[in-house]
Length: 104
Length: 104
Image (cartoon, rainbow over the protein chains, first blue to last red):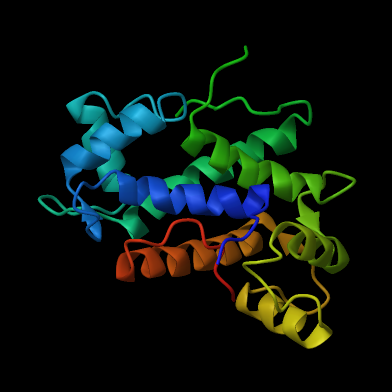
């Protein structure tokens, strides 16, 4: 059944479908390479550090990804939470801030 | 500096700005009434239970909101996480599912 989604519902759907879209097999986890490709393509302004191996390793560690493991949706969600919280803090400090795609 | 956001970056911004927009004072927390108004307006398909007092109370409890307290961004994020995880699970089971704005 088709339904009309609101902006907020579409936003939640986007977070989920973009994670899925990053895996050609639509598997439950992304390989580190798939994750890196997604972040550099889809979060170029919010996450500047993932292009380099060192920055990527640091990011994976913060997300709770063990060495040699894939990236789960839960891991990805840690990143989204961090970005949203930072963004929320910025908006809180400066009410004039709109979409500024903050840097990490 | 204006910047071009990707769909994923816009989605994260939408989650944050919609929470802010729900509070006329742009305060750090929403009153229960402001939260209820936001959910019924912005999550009508994903959250069907918030219109009634009993459903709203249950939802607030799941989000970790103490009685008599306001709704923080962290509380709201519990809800978003829950919706996204459910949506992720649905997509995992049925790869043909696109934006279906699942029901809670």
